[in-house]
Length: 190
Ligand SMILES: [Fe+2]
Image (cartoon, rainbow, N blue to C red):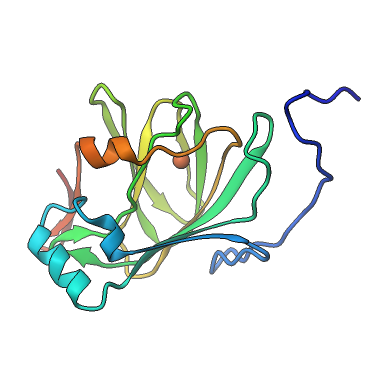
């Protein structure tokens, strides 16, 4: 068998993921973002400052069992976004492009409900509903951010090419064209 000469050879493996809680055994990469990590991302900065001052609650976590971050491998993760609002705006992840911008990604929602917001650098905007069993295909070139509009954690499983990487910086300067609010008891994207 010929192996692509820049891709690390590893043996196959399997693992059990709890589809209700998203728990992934041996997830040695554990990214934790509390509310304070989201400074500048929400529309209501006074509500954001109050949330941080009032205990800086857990916002979201990403669990990964690492594989080589190389062409040919597939990174995979569990994303767990807590429910809540900053003012009227639902909790969301920072969002990112991939460092290799022509890198797509698949998200499969396992629990909770919300949206995947997507945008391109030239200003196109698109969103898809996320709920248990729904898969969202994020094509190459689209930045993506998830939003939890429910009362339970929004949990999803992701898969993307190993050499894709993450670019959060452009989102911090560009923001997203749409935000998700609760207004008069309705979910509104504007
Ligand atoms: Fe991604």
